[in-house]
Amino acid sequence: MKKWIAIGMVLSMLTGLCACAPQPDKEKQVKVAVVRNLGHDDHTEQYFDGAVSEGEALGYQVDTFLSGADDEIFQNTVEEVIAGDYDGLILSHGKEKYSHSLIEKAVKNGIKVVTFDTIFQPVEGVTATAQDDAQLARLSLDRIVSGSAHKPARVVKVWYDEKMAPFQKRNAVYE
Image 1 (cartoon, rainbow, N blue to C red):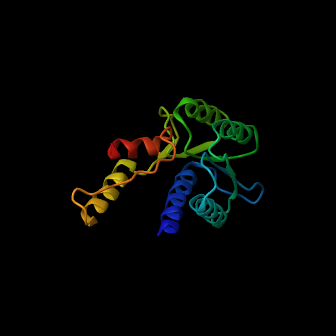
Image 2 (cartoon, helix red, strand yellow):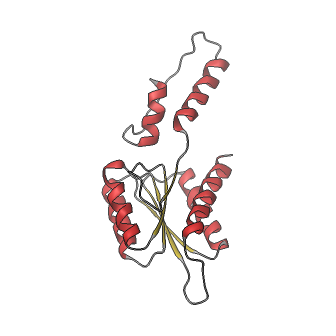
Image 3 (tube, rainbow, N blue to C red):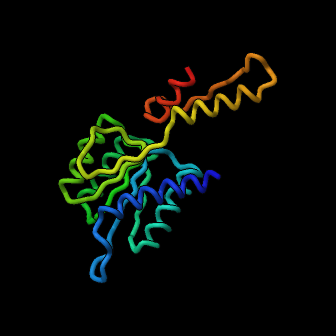
C-alpha cells in the first residue's frame, strides 16, 4: 500500500511539473532533479524509484538527491541543481526558513518547480503539494482508540523530528 501511495504522490508531482515544463524534443532531453530532505528509508527509496520510472516514461531524465535530513546539505544540493542544467525541480520536505528563497532563485533561473510538504510563501508558477498530516494523525489515533481493549486507550508516541512541518501538524493532533 505504501508503495502505491508513494508512486501516486510522485506521479502527481511529475504531472504538475509536466504541465508547465517544456516538452522533450529530439535535441535536448528535459532534466528533472528530485531533492528530498529526509533520511534514507524504504519510503524514500520507493519515492525515488517512482520518480525515476515515471519521469523516464515521460521522456525525462530524472536525477535524485537525498540530504539525509541535513538542512545544510539540502540547501547546498538545491543550489547545485539551480546552477546546473536542470529544467525541473521537485523539492520534498524543505523547511520554511530557507525554501522560499531557493524556490524563487530556481524560478528566476527558468526552472519549473513542484514542492511536496515544503512550507514557503507562494511563488507564481510553483505547484505546491502536500498530504493532510493532521487528518492522517486523526485517522490513526481514532483507529487505535476504537480498536483498543483498554478504555481509555493507552498510546505510546515515539517521536522523530517535530521541527519538520508534517510532524508538527501530526503532533498538534496528538497533543
